Image (tube, rainbow, N blue to C red; front, side, top):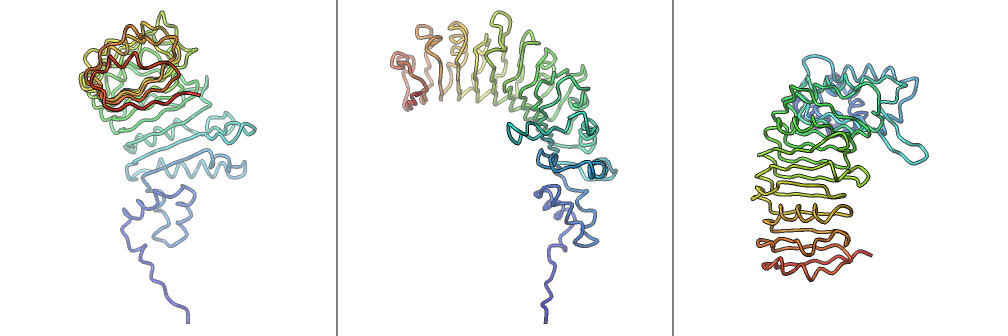
Length: 345
């Protein structure tokens, strides 16, 4: 006699079942619709929606229209629950296969419409990694920068030029990550209108179109700036930081004019990795972070400001990376308690 196995999972509330489905890849979540009538439309109410490069590579000319209809049903149907996260990633499989992109010009995916639909559902996190934006029409809609529900925003968009609308306001944004985008002066307006922003990252962004990167944020606690050496014109570009509550600062790449930094009294930890630039700019940067308690430092010997280092009265921990003599800087750190040396080979 066959045993009758009780289906206990289906007795959970729809809210709990949708939460469980949110941990599955979208393809597997849809498959659960055949379990029973209770499960038939549950996948349309999941709170985390992710389309990645692996899914994109599996699409064919035969099923692509069905996929578009499915996405419309998933994102744009009324009376659906709010979204916790919408994630859209291009795929890089190998050097031979290149990039699989949702914006390839052939399949006419409504990327802008998908983003707008997610915003209309009160999405809290948007994570976009798009490597084929270039000069195509704007698939990142301006409404992205006026959404009050967003808490976390990640935008990795190779070659994309950010133009922020005049009415920009991301009132609840706490984490903002930018990578490989072209930054214009309007980005300064965006930063100043993120009133609760706590974590800001510029990773390998081009600032060639901006006269100045002006970071004015009293709420900011963590800041990461990485610049590519070919992107910087030292005679023009500068970074102004006014973040009195900043606790963690990470800087890498080429050194530009960074100022004023004088009011960063709350700063506790900094990681500095500098390979190119002027000694004057480097010395100015160190002056601004002289109140820190923990420092990770890697700097080329060509711009090591041995004669212009400030006194780090509060520094108790130093991690030094490099192949230059560090002994002469120890007199600038009278209260140092912990020293870690990592020589570069």
